Length: 381
Ligand SMILES: *Cc1c(COP(=O)(O)O)cnc(C)c1O
Image 1 (cartoon, helix red, strand yellow):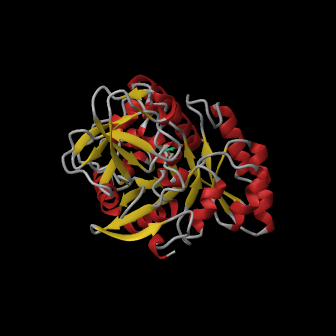
Image 2 (cartoon, rainbow, N blue to C red):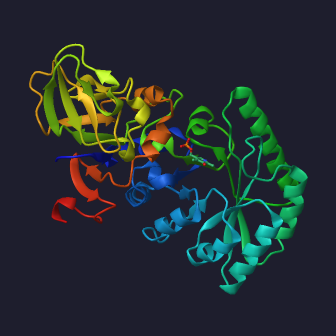
Image 3 (cartoon, helix red, strand yellow):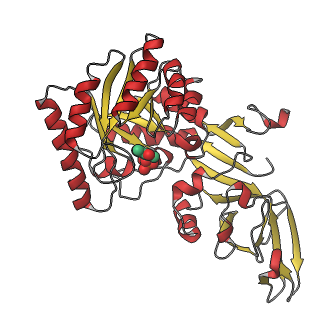
């Protein structure tokens, strides 16, 4: 198939999920984090796949993502981990979305909204143990606020959570100590909250025995964890394109805007229909590489918005239409991230909406998600 597409390998996703599920204690629930279009992998595809594998919760960043997930999963509990503004509470109530809360006035406002629909809303309380992003900062305020929340008829406090900065073991321990102290105090006060959670992918891998009831996993499900794991994680996304043009250039000729690359000797240049607007960082213009027929070739000249050029001199039998991998199963995303001066999650989540997602299962393409032309096989559109 010609052109740029992100291949989404559900076999790899399933394997990652099962390996992680077997690694974590049975009592620990898994929330699959599918914010940012499931880190670029396609929100709805990943939501449905994870549900079919037996994920316990779905977590997203904001209410609009939550509603999008609700449209494909009727029963699944869905947590918005970020802040939801009061003007969006009705959306949360109508779609049965669990919200993250950390201010009494917001909790009261949500309670009022829920009362209009006679709906009891689950909430998770965010506790800031040192990340300094969202959450209650001191224990006494949480306790006194939650005592008042317990009086509110339309709210049910299902969860309490924090987020680790993962600076080092000491700072993690400090944060978990603060979290544990709150949980202990809540118990002493007779406030029972069924689900405490603190760990993301890295946290879950390095603290699998942490005494909490849920983990929130994004990166690991998609095949990545920057700490050693006792099993293999497989990349789920492979960003691919095809060769659209080939030509020889003479010594002294340059390539792309500003002529930043000039050939020293005759060079065979391949053009690829992928550029920075597709999610290929422009700063890979220097140092970036691609994989063609299992060999690595350098990107040359400035990456354009929609295209880039590669020096394929020495590739004996390269042809128009040949498949090229930017990162994924064969070309290391970690290497690309280092070269681009970013992290893997940023590269994955920035794969653009104009790039179709080819969904692979049992080794075969089972669907193509095309945000421009609609879902379904875009060959038929
Ligand atoms: C994004 C996010 C996660 C998932 O992080 P990974 O490192 O991708 O597993 C977990 N918790 C919160 C609060 C997040 O924002």
